[in-house]
Structure formats: C-alpha cells, structure tokens
Length: 348
Ligand code: TXA
Ligand code: MG
Image 1: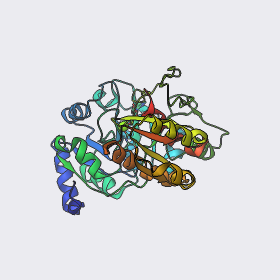
Image 2 (image 1 turned 180 degrees about the horizontal axis):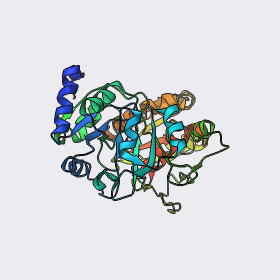
Image 3 (image 1 turned 120 degrees about the vertical axis):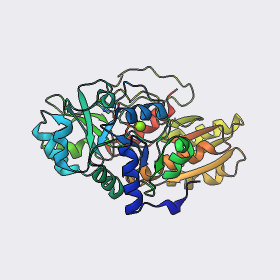
Image 4 (image 1 turned 30 degrees about the horizontal axis):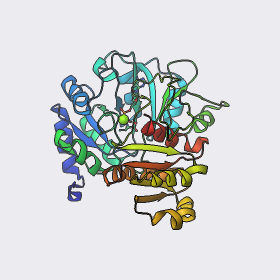
C-alpha cells in the first residue's frame, strides 16, 4: 500500500519538478483524477506515457497549465468564448480543445491540429506546473481502458512500478474526469461529460443549449449486446472504457432487485453497487444471501457519488465476486457523466 507519510512538501514538489525536467514520469493529484505527468515539451517523456499506459499513439493527451497567460503558448486562433469559459471555470474540471500552437509536440496531440488544455484546481498540481515552468501533459494515471485512479494508492497498485515518483495529494475531490469541450467549430461541442454540465456552459456563454456527442444507450444487462452507433470523435472515448477486470452489469433501477435475484439464482457470486435507499429497501431480503460478496450503497447526490465511484469500483474489482451489478443512475443531466462512465465500464 502506498505510504501516506509521503504527503508532498515544498521539497518533494521541487524534486518532482526536477524529475519532470529530466524527462521522467510523475503521477500527480488533480481535483478530478490522478494524472500520469510528463513535461509537455519533452518528446521522450511523452513516449514513455504512451508506453506505460499501453495507449494508442493516436489518442492525444491533455496539457495542464497553471496560469491563463500560458494558453497562448499552446494554442492559436483562440476564440473569445474560450477566455469566457476559462475565466468562469478555471482552475477547475473543464478541458478546452483549441487549435494547437505550432510549438506543441505532435506526439502530445496524437498528430491532430488541435490541443486539449486545462488548469486543474489542485494546489499540488498547480505548484508542480509552476515550478516546472512548462505545461504538464497528463492522461489519467491508469492502464488504457481500465478504472481511473482517484487515490494515490490506485496508481501505486496498477502502474506504481513504472512511474518515477508519485505525489500523494489524498483522494480527488471531484472523482471523475474533466468535462471536455471542443471550441474548434463555431459552436462548442461537448466531447466528454463531467462535473461541469452542458447547462453550466450554456449559461456561461448566454446560449440556450450546448451540443454533446455523448449519447445514452439502452441498457442490456443480461444479453450483453449493443449496436455501436454514434462512434465518438474523441479518440480516447471508446465504447468500452473505465472498466474493471471482471464483468460489470448496469441494471435499470426499477429491475435492480429482480436482476440481482436472477444472478443469485444462477449461484453467481456478485458484488453490488446501488443507491442507499435501494439497499435499505432490499437489504433484508437479499443481503443475507451467501452469493453477495459486498454491497456498497452510495449517495443520491451525483457530486458525492462521483467522489467515491472509482474507489468503489477498484474495491469491488478485487473482491471474490465474479461480477459487479450496478444500479443505473437516473437519465438526467446531473447524472450524465456518471451514467456515461458506467455505460462504458459495462460495455461488452
Ligand atoms: O480530468 C481529466 O481530464 C484528467 C486529469 C488528469 O486532468 N485527465 C484525463 O486524461 O482524463 P485522459 O487522457 O485519460 O483523457 C483525455 C481525453 C481522451 O479521451 C482524449 O482522446 C481527449 O481527452 N483529447 C485529448 N486531446 C484531444 C484533442 N485534441 N481533441 C479531442 N479529444 C482530445
Ligand atoms: Mg483516461
């Protein structure tokens, strides 16, 4: 287990910045999830990121900055709405896709002419970027397609032996990845849902609504078959993503108890993730059963739910169950990001 005594100090942040300058890899906390950081101007370090994550070279990285003025060193032809969004939401869980500055390495952008930028809202990340004096390219610090890390120990257990240093900033306060908005066309387009909602962005820009490329699919918990429509244009958003090693089935709330009973009747050891009130309602009838390994109940507030989601999935992926049965959240905008992550985690 990762040693909590290693909480970052001024000196360890200086040390981590020195490592980054030398082309080494540092896992760093942000408010969303932990990032696998490399100096954005260091080609060899960027290559290491792709190798560690086993990530396709075509899937670009987000560059993390610590101050507004740095945008202009990484992007060109920046539209006015970018400044408006940045002023409102930075530092924070919003990533803007803009036209890339010619000096940005093609390795970072997967060969695209665009670049994804964000100022994270985490004092350790900000201090590290400031000390380095350059942007930090950082994808989530997990193996490609697997569950993202919301605690330093998640990084330690999965890729800890491949990184040069881990800065432990405690549990991430948001817990799921940033909202990504493309500003390449006249109208903004949401590429990935996050804590900042489409309506927050619309409100900030004084428009009625913002288009999103994220679509919901009907849930098929038992048959495991979907038709793959609406292929995402974000290279990293494959239909299967954020997934535990074992099967995860996303069950409609109204049939959660009957589906769980169905698995129990098949004598399958399962672990459950539901809302608190569902557990209260059904725990007496289902919980006593031998086949339920763990039953974790989360809050009905999406922001509190998101803080625990990846930690819970890491825990349930390691227990003795054969599969994880998850009660689907409501299909409303405040749950959009969580529903999206769970759908990708359950995709077969
Ligand atoms: O909250 C976050 O965004 C975290 C923390 C560490 O900042 N980072 C993160 O990075 O989630 P990653 O690499 O796991 O996901 C970034 C997503 C990928 O799906 C990638 O394809 C997309 O951003 N992306 C990056 N650059 C892009 C670009 N130029 N155009 C479109 N999508 C881009
Ligand atoms: Mg990721």
